[in-house]
Each structure stands twice: as C-alpha cells, then as structure tokens.
Length: 218
Image (cartoon, rainbow, N blue to C red; front, side, top):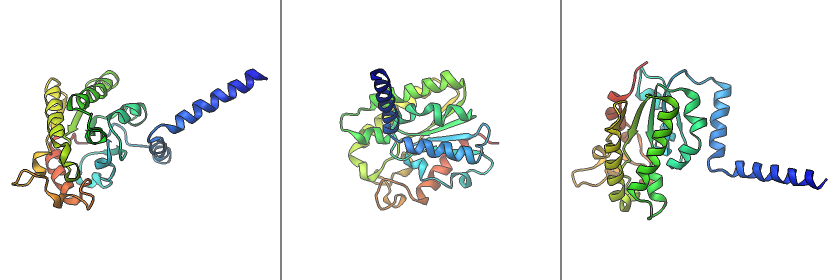
C-alpha cells in the first residue's frame, strides 16, 4: 500500500512539473489547432516571441509563400529550445524564420550578448542535428523604445549572431534594426504601439520589405 501511495505521489509530482512549465498552455493551443486543421506540409515556419505572435496576418504580407506562425509571446531562446520538439521539428519546415533574443536581454541586466549567442547556437545546432541543411533565417533583434537601456547589448548580440551565421551557407541574418531607426539614431516611435515595445502595422511593413527577398516561395 505504501508503495502505491508513493508511486501516486511521484506521478502527481511529475504531472505538476509538466503543467508548471512556462508557456505550456500556448503549446497545447498549437497542438489543438493542428488537430482541428492539419498544418501545411513543409511550411515557412515562423517561431519566436511576441513580434511574431502579434503578426497574425503574416500570410497576407508574403503571398506565394506558405507561412505557419508558431510564435508565442514573452518567450526567450531557452523557451523555444524547450519546445523545439513540439513547434519546430514535427512540421518538417522548408525554412525556419526566428525572432527571439529580445526577451532574454530584457529579463535581466546580467544577460550578456555572448549569453544570447550561446543560447542561439544551441537552438541552431539542434535544428541542424534534426533537420539537416534546412534554410534558417534569423531576424535581428529590434530597437524597442521601451527597452532603450538594453540597446548596447542588443547591438552586440545582433553582431555576434550575424558573424556566427556567416559560416553557414543555408542560413541568413536579416537586419531590420537599422531600418527602424530615425535620423537621430533612435527608434522611430511611430512604428510602435502605445507600449513602445510591440509594433504596429507600419513596423511590420518595414519587416515585410526587408524579409521578402529571403523567404522561400511555394
């Protein structure tokens, strides 16, 4: 009897741990969507944080591409890594477009550009190990006005990731950072919503123009 109680307690502990994982509900919601409507085969897969989550009409920006958006708001690179077996690998994408790293930096003053690079390297290595030479596009971390104090780290992280991806002919770094700055070198506030963090349609138009040449058609 004691063994049964101990076993049940262990199962309960494991169950609690699983459901306590960050963004668990988001992943469950994605899986429910997939069960109701089968996702497209070999899509251009968007993964990352809220800049993709909010871009719900992303498909209309890129006609001729088959886009699947699996961004979940508030996520950092470790979160994407945690759920890569749920939101990346099962879709067998022909291309993976990543926007992530901004929340990593904003989470703590102790997160350095080198730490962001190391986290991205792990994600990239996992993708290469599982999906081979699939096309990977990293969208540079944007200059958010509400996070101005973190911009030196953002600039350095973008630089390090750009340099890292130069070594891989099937990967691209897409610089949207510079296009979002005004003549004064500061982020253009009219590209953002009231929170000065998330973009409005003007911001996404800029992203569309810069991203379009990099995305695979079909």
